[in-house]
Length: 167
Image (cartoon, rainbow, N blue to C red):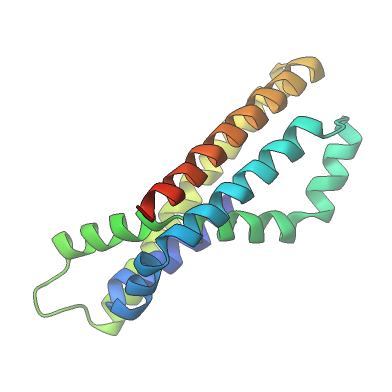
């Protein structure tokens, strides 16, 4: 999941670093459907988490068999978040040289964003992995349920945001 988010962040960094205004314009012009898609996706993830039958063996099978699916899901969720492109564009506008970035500078910057995002997610996974062994299966099931409810609520808020974008 962290790899998918990092890949999405790197894609947005590439868009911002290379100044691909057409991609940015597309994202902003299609803000409503992207918010709606992201909201539906969050609700689906939340419901999946709420109704999942969890055992340590099933979780291990899901993690090993669904790594590509989880990577793609996280990347898609990141790419359907229009505020992310706005944030990257704002940061690059503030930090980029006035004459623009060379291709090598842009590539180095994108690699730095990817590496930084991956480092962050590796630390999050390391911390969560330590907690995973410190708490029991029952507590993990409650955490899954609560996170599922939060994802459904965030998905509903994202859908509401998409509907409000059309007004």
